[in-house]
Image (cartoon, rainbow, N blue to C red):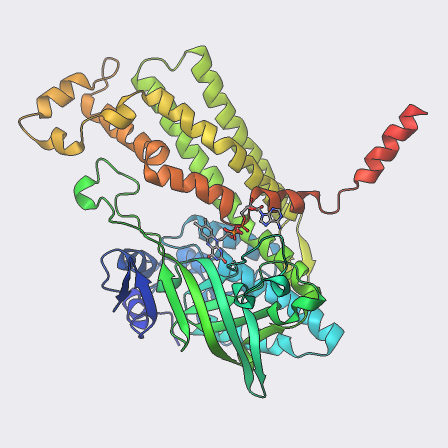
Length: 473
Ligand SMILES: Cc1cc2nc3c(=O)[nH]c(=O)nc-3n(C[C@H](O)[C@H](O)[C@H](O)COP(=O)(O)OP(=O)(O)OC[C@H]3O[C@@H](n4cnc5c(N)ncnc54)[C@H](O)[C@@H]3O)c2cc1C
């Protein structure tokens, strides 16, 4: 199959999937006023055609040996060059990033080989075949990893309700049947395929919960209950919400009620010994996305801070220069971590794996620094970050001149330019979307605790203790 057009992707979502939003069943996600916004955004990723420049085609797609062209996001990175291109592709993509789905497929490829070597299973050909089909069908995937969990101090097999973690409830000659729920699945209502992966390291009693498989979004027994997105401010308020005026982030709790998964879509069934390693590889690939997004986002914060200070005529003031200097330090640190992550690579089972410590350190750096940067930006913009008139008042002939007169900055900075920047700062630092981005930073792609564990893995604390003991002698 050739690369799909955006319209073909959208049409593929009209498949009777079971989605609920704000208390109602959604008949068609492609026409739903809010969920469809994300589908339309994702659609922009498709439709690469003959008219594309060779550079863009090379960045976004890969030519398979038989001449078929597929999206780069569907393939694992085999070489360092692949990895660099993947990161560059993610940097320039519209809509949902595909890093997480690719991370899942790539982790499965690595672990499939290991499981087959140890247990004589035959996961590798299944995973390869599924990944090849996924790429050639040009699908959009979501990864479904985070279980509902229940009591966090207990393992899946210790829960009062065994469905709190997705598990195998029946094994048949032709496949397995799974039940349970995954939460927070990004873009699930507008994906074609759900990749189910275990979310924690499992023990021997948790064999039935040690399951990885692929499920079509409209498979019988799959129900998605969407988060509440609310009504975006919309095009009319583009001046007031220049970045997020039309945002829509439909994530879902995905319930699997006795869903049959044929054998060729089952990639782990009971091999609890490999769950920890699978999560390790998945997280490293997934968190590599932080290297893409965060330097870019932090640079925007620096630009906004510097411009606001300049508009207000205070860019030379000491504490402001220090504040911006701290942000610059963080971006420089992220750049160094990015370089390390993409240079200190390992090759595991034919896959190029970025450096786990650098990927996780990048996440920790951003999580601790970002809230302070947003506070600093609000301080710079002053009260108007929350109280300034709307762009609609700027457009209204009755109030326009007043707004323009009283929102000027230093000489030469018009009221309109300064207000535009204030609204930009509002949108990225003081709005509901700003709070969303802070919460996203500490939760999505794993909590800071999970990142700290990954950073400490392999570090020899006892060697440090021994050094001190020697000095004490
Ligand atoms: C915007 C967004 C998008 C996301 N997209 C996806 C997605 O596409 N697919 C997907 O699968 N997931 C997704 N996630 C989920 C994300 O990966 C999880 O939120 C994250 O891994 C934390 O899991 P949790 O939400 O179940 O929190 P919990 O596990 O409840 O953790 C909450 C806190 O409790 C702590 N904690 C938990 N258990 C223990 C324990 N046993 N001992 C000590 N402390 C503990 C954690 O460290 C954390 O601080 C997304 C999350 C967000 C916010």
